[in-house]
Length: 168
Image 1 (cartoon, rainbow, N blue to C red):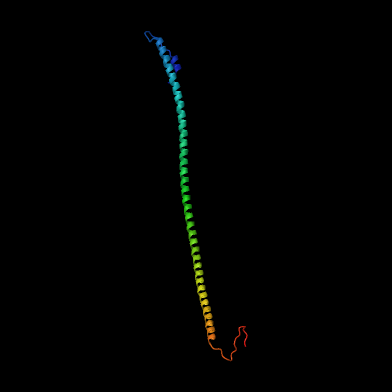
Image 2: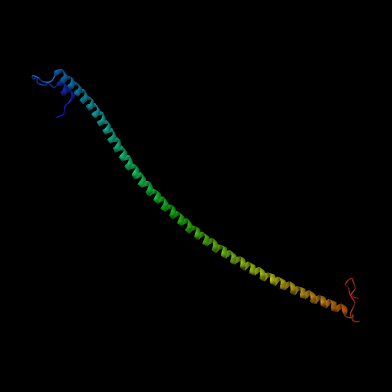
């Protein structure tokens, strides 16, 4: 049974001979009623505070769960991004290796072409030198023949050459 301050105030005791002083009992009951009333108000305030704290605790637990889910999701996204970046890096490396291989093959082909061109130029140089030598030998023989003709005495039956180029 719950006793309220009103119950205390309305409480009536039977009067007996040599009983308690009525005024003291009434005063005590009044003080007791006030104390119970204060305790009831405090209890109500504390209950409201407890309800508010429980509500805040519930909201905080929801926020914590949301944060945990967000953290897990973010960690998953970060892991996915790391894996994607790693795959991209591997692809870039493979593409670079293929491009480097292609450039190397092109450079080797160009080098081979340049070497062929150089070899052809060397052959052409040797042929030009040989033609020049041959031409020089021909001119040298012609000079020797001309010099040999000038050293021979002119025969009597041979007409002399005149400076103007006509024969006499």
